[in-house]
Image 1 (cartoon, one colour):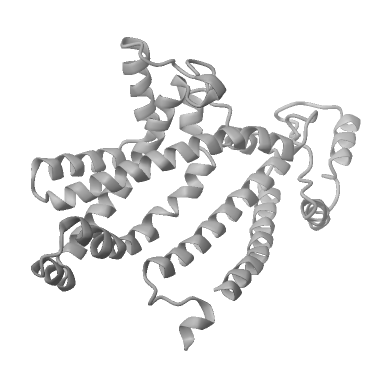
Image 2 (image 1 turned 120 degrees about the horizontal axis):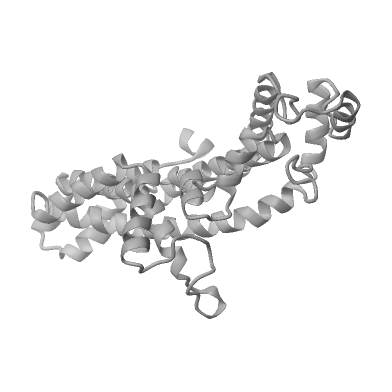
Length: 320
């Protein structure tokens, strides 16, 4: 296991290099640039000085090598749109908020989704199952910006239960343990992943319940709680892990729609803004962060497979 994890972490370096090369090449291939004269006309001398300052007057391959030589030291440059700060400082300030939203969304989505899926499976074809199935389909098909807008209109404008936007500004308890303006964006953001988790949990639990070993255990008089914890859930987790865990990097890197609608100063909103403004250092750093999170989640997924089912072996162990 240790050898496998170390090899995967080592291969992560090459994944990040490949992602950085592809991203840098695509950015350079698109016509225009961050200081395109069609957006902000500049005198030739002024534009030449700006390009020289940021190294954009050099060949693309040299720009890439210069960038990576600094990136390995965690120096991701200066954002073009905010030259008074650094990319690393900007990501720290914005991703902290996005990660906070993401963690609360993950906890809500997985806890409620698992519960709904298990209850629906054990009450198959009942009104509870019908409700969960309808709720899951609605959450998957309805876009997050529609859910967010509806939540603001209903609970913010008409009922006035919650503030219309912001983050950590309204109704916070001592030490910011809980704030009222966290509720609407987290619930709106969690509905889609919650629906996915509920739907696949229901399908996985139903598949395991119908298996021979579960019917045999029930016939021997094993209690439903023991049957669920020892036999059903453990076997149902494998397909659920495959589907649900890759949702986490998306939730941890923010949603442009949720952050824009609820005025959350997070990384997702800023990343899209940087893309439109051709802010190369910010785009590169954010893409590398997303690639790192995806690779890390897939590694954790493989490790969880062996925990759920000890028969699964990783790396060289599986070849024996």
